[in-house]
Amino acid sequence: MNQMISKPQQGTTVKPEELVPSRYAVQIGEIEVLVISDGVLPLPTKMLGHNAEAADRAAWLKDMYLPQDAFDWSLNVVLVRSGAQTILIDAGLGLDPDLNLPRAGQLIKRLESAGIDLGSVTDVVLTHMHMDHVGGLLVDGVKERLRPDLRIHVAAAEVKFWEAPDFTHVNMPEGFPDALRAAAKKFAADYRDQLRLFEDTHEVAPGVVVHRTGGHTPGHSVVRLASGGDRLTFAGDAVFAVGFDHPDWHNGFEHDPEEAARVRMRLLTELAATGEQLVATHLPFPSVGRVAVDGDTFRWVPVFWDY
Image (cartoon, rainbow, N blue to C red; front, top):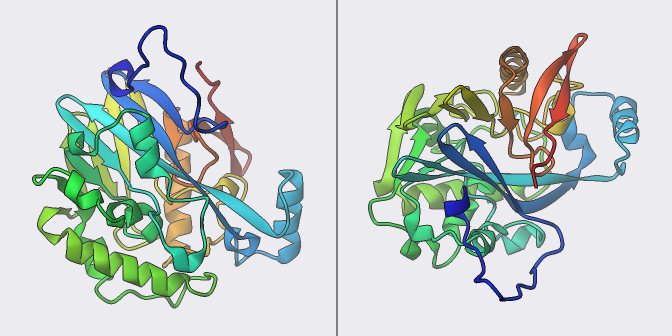
């Protein structure tokens, strides 16, 4: 991982641009992993579980020492280096001034601050095509800095879904459905020639395999990393912070909430059995931890930071 991050020359003084760190490195065998924060997305707390009683949501928020009105969702992106390939898993929110989300969309500048050249990225894997996962690729000037032979891996079912998306089962704030439609449409048009579609399972690089789960969206996928006996899963939007205590709560962005809950239960059960590490888009940064069984539900076990 040291090769992935540029270092200042000896004797120089570097003034940090941000007080809070925005990247965290993990080694999975021979695979280098860098978790990068794209910022935070403030959303109404009802979106944590719109099928739950308001009193139950309020009790969970109180127990977690969180405010009752709005919850800051972390936005995590992962950069992976396996062999000769540098793989960006999801691309953050980008910029959508109509939604007034100034604390998100930080990925591009944070890649630069980590010494990551956009032109070094050989592959992009998209867990799905919601705007907070593709938006960074739509920022003005980004496409021109990417390799012309860039491969973007996404489930065929995901691309098909966004041709005529169904929003009948979601529970989103006003403006979000239109923004999601617009971002997905623009992404499909701008990057159609770079898309590499897969059906259910696809090996992107040695030890880097993407699996379609469905649920959150029809083509939602998770990325499994394995090398030298170490394993890590990037779960995209299959798992949210409340999902360990209440895996049956429906998230407001889930297009098929009942299937999403089943996917979440299966994934958390598997991760608890294997003991492998977990990173997810909306778990608190740096989002690296493990899953334990806690009675009929689960418990999130954050890793001890290595610094």
